[in-house]
Amino acid sequence: MCSEIVTRFAPSPTGFLHIGGARTALFNWLYARGRGGKFLLRIEDTDRARYTPEATAAILQGLAWLGLDHDGEVVSQHEMAPRHAEVAHELLAKGAAFKCFATQDEIEAFRETARAEGKSTLYRSPWRNADTSTHPDAPFVIRIKAPDAGKTVIRDTVQGDVTIDNAQLDDMILLRSDGSPVYMLAVVVDDHDMGVTHVIRGDDHLNNAARQMMIYHGMGWNVPVWSHIPLIHGDDGKKLSKRHGALGAQEYQAMGYPAAGMRNYLARLGWSHGDDEFFSDEQAKEWFDIDAIRKSPAQFDLKKLENICGQHIAVADDAALRHEVEGYLAAARLPALSDAQSSGLERALYCLKERAKTLPELVEKGHFILTSRPIECDEKAAKNLDTVSRSILGELTPHLQDASWDKETLEEVLNGFAAARDTKFGKLAGPLRAALAGRAVTPSVFDMMLVLGRDETLARLTDAAT
Image (tube, rainbow, N blue to C red; front, side, top):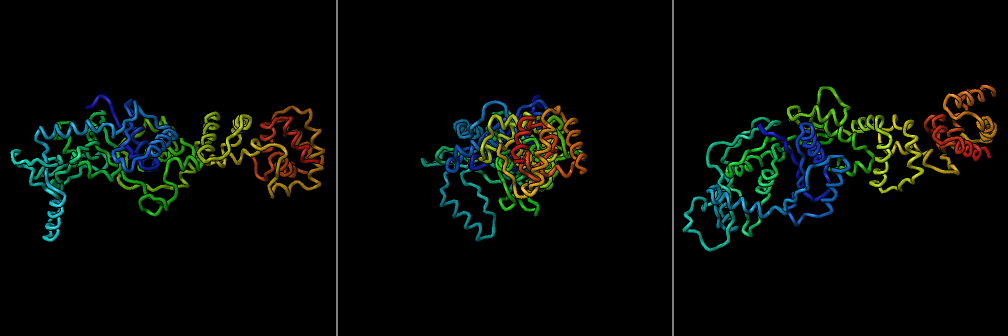
């Protein structure tokens, strides 16, 4: 039994942090963090033709937004290439690999013949057991010696035991003729050298496990615990793609979903803890276990995401929520809040956050504190400020001049003012909402007055009355 759990997330830097990759990172993070282990990050940047530093930055930013912190420095797979080549030569020295001098033309000719004869095109090199004295002075690749009989069993904690007929395994290339290592070798060497004990990744990598196990066995290394998790599908049951909507983690930040809600929702995609839908990070770390991951693909449901996010907004710390709003505005490339707006929004959050499912909804509900005089009314609100309503607001203002500025007193003053005119407070609410916020739908009038304060409230009512 290993003394410390070590997991890793190893994305390819060819684009944004895919929402499926974000869930894989989350599962690795939860498993390690919940057991006092390490969560490592490796950028698999061996494909230099497709690699871009911007993509690496996008992945790091996406992980940072999601709050998935990693231990140690970020490992660049490309920089480890000399170590990968060293292992290939060590396998060669052990007799677990061999030099192959076959040319591409010879390999293609073999495959054409195999296709014509209806045989397997899986390439078995004639150089596999050749005497080294027969080796020509020519370019070569280093290939692994795949087992030529029997079966390989992938013991997977999610998929169960998966058996692969070794006849399906080829003598795969480890080191190209130019001396560069292939991805399959690099992954194994990096995982071993980083001390990874548990490999949690998408089930599209399941078949790779059998091929990677050849390297582990050839080097005499311990094979990690495999956990191949199902992919995420759209609501039509097909693999999640652009036709289903946003795919990048940062797109969801720009759409205004809070990170805590996204973590909660992604954790529930393919994993469950009884009937619990809403939970904190600490609960997720305590509860998460690979054994509870389902084999079937999970379906991404935007309505469920919004519902979970709404619950997280409602219980969020006000200062943290204000900070998240500022991050959303930056991600969405919207104007930043001034210091006054930012502090005002934080004061208002107590009366905003219980009914907002996303941060844009929260910002819209907080419009009254983010806007400034003169207040511009939308079409619906403007209808509540006719001549009679303006006159009533003018009469109301003196009653508020010396009132104590607390909710109970304000309710007494406004209800008393309405009763004196033989009407109900509801009749005053429309004009007050229009005057204070320029909207027909707002938080409670009393809450807006408390957040705005006496001077700003009276100034807005005076403006509306004239």
